Length: 72
Image: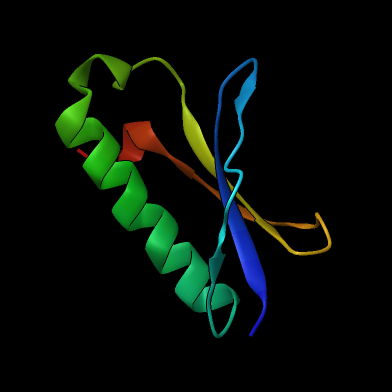
């Protein structure tokens, strides 16, 4: 199974060191949305500050981004 990483980004990156093994890109995007929702729940001060979850695969290729601001 491929490994995906979920980094918190704005003008800098907070890297996901471990990542997660998931079956495909679609599941990785779903997990990124779950992470974003949990972050906003635990850290509401991040809302409105243009943070996103950047999803990359094991080769470092970008799969997508989930902006925290669209999850109201």
